[in-house]
Image 1 (tube, rainbow, N blue to C red):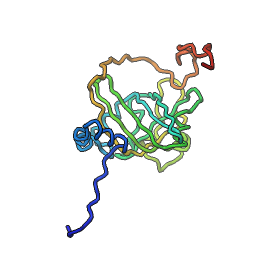
Image 2: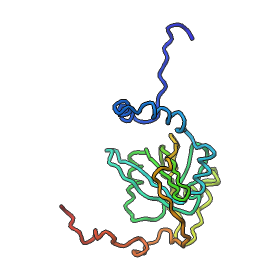
Image 3: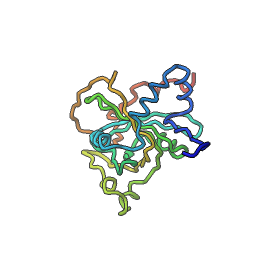
Image 4: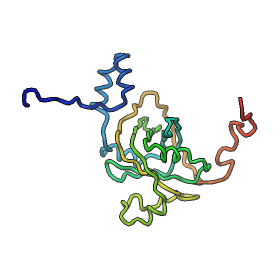
Length: 213
């Protein structure tokens, strides 16, 4: 190295806020070890294998003002399709019509996906940038990767209406500690149903609750 050359610091994963708090609460060394050993900018083979088995995930989004929302998504095993080590896609089925997650993505493409396997007691975070693609457009696109062009076979009910394609920025483990172990029970799912009882009805009595407080 030439004498006097400027060495640029290596950018750490995460936000400025988390780095400031790591210093404040004296956790910087532990955090840096986690960044160094666990955080990847792509999906390695083990992560891809894990994703192929998942039937559910949590999706975190925020609008252009930073107002956040977290939603639940589910499907048959492999409903999240890994297109390559830097890209995945998941389907959007018919829902309540609010489209809160997709609306946020329209304003702010940053998304955080959390997969938790309650049988294996392990989780995976995937953070990235999202875009919305209509299902018909995907099926017509002969250049699209085959894993996406294959429509998801629903055991009963509607297929996906559109897809969210995510470019991966970060992927890292969610540790097993405190994840409860659960047992899967096989049951038939009516994907995209409008049946009120199947959707949970007015479980929280919101329909008859006061609109203002």
